[in-house]
Amino acid sequence: MQAEINKVELRNLQIEDYKQLKTSMLHAYDEFDEPYWEEEEIERLLSLFPEGQLVILVDDKVVGSALSILVNYKKASSNHTYQKITGNSSFSTHDPEGEVLYGIDVFIDPEYRGLRLGRRLYDARKELCETLNLKSIIFAGRIPKYSKYSEEMTPKEYIDKVRLKEFYDPVLSFQLSNDFHVMKIMKNYLEGDVSSQEYAVLLEWNNIYYEKSPKLINARKSVIRLGLVQWQMRPLANLEALFEQSEFFIDVVSGYSSDFVLFPELFIAPLMADYNHLSEADAIREISHFCEPIRKKFQEFAIAYNINIITGSMPYTEDGNLYNVGFLCKRDGTSEMYTKIHITPNEVQYWGMKGGSEIKTFDTDCGKIGIMICYDVEFPELSRLMADEGMEILFVPFLTDTQNAYTRVKLCAQARAIENECYVAIAGCVGNLPKVNNMDIQYAQAAVFTPSDFAFPSNGIKAEATPNTEMTLIADVDLDMLKKLHEQGSVRILKDRRDDLYKIKKLK
Image 1: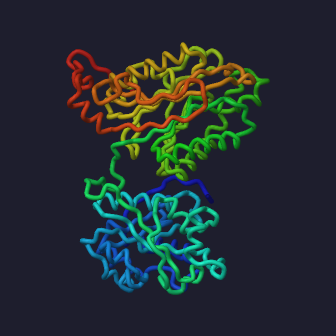
Image 2: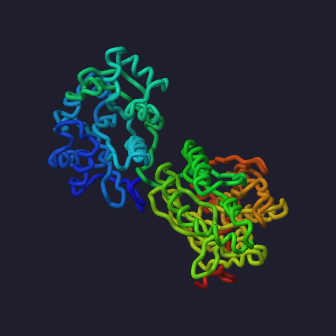
Image 3: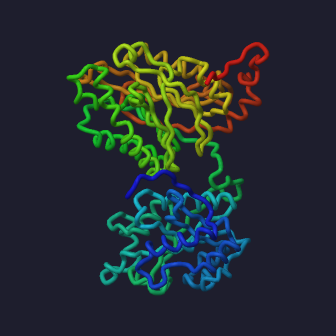
């Protein structure tokens, strides 16, 4: 990535995007004589099927696109050429009643490859297929590495080797990893495609929800997948070692299509080992300098792995004051900071830490969430204010040294889930850190807690990790169940409050 990315946006293509679209296509398809669509062709495509044309923008610049039409299944699955299926680029083959989303183009500007933006376009196509209640997505994929092996093997043999991962093909390998399956091989598909020897592989992705009510593209999801990291404290040589270990966990939970990943409070504490010769207060202030580099790197990870990252917490200095903060790094490339409000006596005594002064919730692509750091969850007023703002999931990164301290966090988190009719996810650090003063032992058990009613587990625990063992915990929570609880629950805590007798409010 050439520069820091501030925002990533996926939306429908507009004719005003054409100049940037053309530039990106020229970069992506420099091997062809005519590597871009004419403006009148794009205008015609938008007039026929506007919802099927998608673009990815990075900092308001178009860097990729996916174009498609609707055709009937028989036409899409039979032998055809690119010119035939597109009506010689007139798109006269588009059938509004067609049951197949046919992909006619997809590309990412080479400068922005490696961020998994192409995967976002394919995921959006899948959502569109479900939204329109279509049978499948079909398109013919190039096999650009085949020309290197064309004299020694057939296209089928080449495809089999790619499928078995003996060969890597930049197009076919990507399609197969996105759950597309091979239907057939077609000859003379795209004239002038020398690298593929004009062969193409007809690929299909089946909509398992066909004939069921689908959701809209980019619409609020009902079922949200949470990934919690139970982080093992270990010596870290430098900041890069922290990033390497963090990326491992992000990669793991994103591989399970998680929407969020939660790291623990002060999980970067091992970096204080280099400053153990200093006082505790000076040592933690030294690692506060890593705060901004960590935010930038995790923002990169959020984009590349298409996941919302809650960075646990880390020390942060401002105007000479030391705070305990974290960042919500969203997969759209934006980030927001949250601050620990209530500081423990230990944090004041050893580090001279101060509490923050802002209570807020965060809007995400998976609904409204709240984030509170450890001790904050023991103060019920905070989460109640967040619930009043519509919070549906509360995330609590924590750091506790003993089982007694963990019990306070756990039981208070469970209470917050019940009284605010929301989900609460907690994640902490485990293991020992003997060479860092004031951070020598840790105890934790990551968990996801639920309200207590018939639709939820009887003990109010959706999932729990193994205590004091490094691992990830992945769990699904259904936001629609909260809606039903608010209106039809055995008790309706939020609705039944006596606002005529008592209220809480923010003072700032």
